[in-house]
Image 1 (cartoon, rainbow, N blue to C red):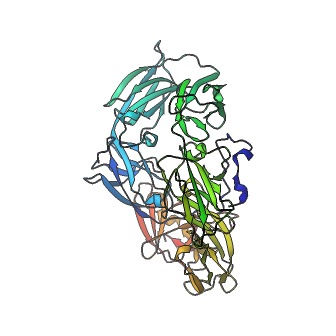
Image 2: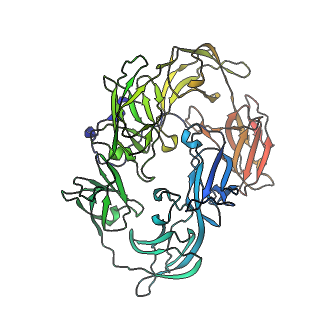
Length: 594
């Protein structure tokens, strides 16, 4: 990580900008093999639900794809590759809390059981009218959770993923499906303002008439309110933000006012965010012109020292909370960053900005803006060498965090040869060290530093590797990428053998789709039925990009994959799978389907 990524808040051009520019990605995402996911489905009171279908909430074809059904204890399991897919519940249930197949099977958080919350679903159809009976067209109907009805799920986590908003048609007609019955209110929005609320019914209703007040909209919107502390006292100089562009500050009495053109005001799902240095942030829905935001309890600090095993201080190392979650899916800040002092340095990373500090000459560090009662794992990273280490959890508010770091020289020497399975040396293979700095699914690119290349005989000789939980990556246009965890390497090696697979060119012939529906996707497997990544070479690319599934067409598709490919599974648009054997040929194209 370059030193320029760490800046004091006071030195930034605009400390109030809620969106930080993400760093440029320096490494390609790696395809991850399928793994077993386990979890349970509860109702809103916390009771396990048996017999509930669980699967992909929305496939590319716009349908629910069932993967499992819960047992008598509400538990389920299925096999799928990590990614950005959302997991929900099928009919007749509505998903109140969804799960995600987060990318990165080696991430500890991804191994926790999935927790889904379901509730019986109802449908609602009817007509929106004004007081004089004329239809109200173009109004949005938005299902929203009722916090008091949720026991098994934090209201902030309630997604109502299956209850999709809708817009009234020219006649004022609307239809809502799969709405959680009895625990949801329907909000009617006109020009971004909530003009009517009504509770979701306990049963299906096919024809309901809703009267909506429809005053002529103004070209400008006005908002005003106040910000108070946990005891109700006003908070002066608090920052109020509504989306990326609109913000205001409170006066000495905690009051604020904001007026903006209607076109500049974000959609209703964008919340107000109130922040003040040293206090945790507060959010509120922007459905009222007059609102009060109450800031929670003051944030906590954590103070500590970095030393070696012989007691020497380590200076210039970055320390930050490891894998904390963003405050809100639609915000780019983390709770820790919003509550940090103005002088606290931050590091830009993906969609979140992480509270961070650099150890001083005595190894001392201080983190501010931490949530009370939360255990934090601290990440220590040396931008100069790539040293990375993660500490055991420590409670926020701890002022005596003494972290004894391991030997920064993780591997004394790393030398060997890169060969194919037939013994052919791989020359000019690039060798890189990848170290994670945050969650890959949050867009946080790993730290990537080039260590060297293999010579004509495929040899490499690296003096030392730093202590890190990162990975060594070997790549070349002629081979499939190979990664090795640094923790799996011996302390010293003079002849480490890296066996790689060569890449072969494949063509999915149009004959493969003859007498069957069009092919929607393709997956490759080796002789042991383990999945293999599919590579597609694009014009101008030096190395192929990696995909888990390849979109295909009726006219054939050309792609690159490992020589270990033994079979292909073709999935048609109806979801039926067809397995085709493969015999790769080095140096010439291998056609699938003939």
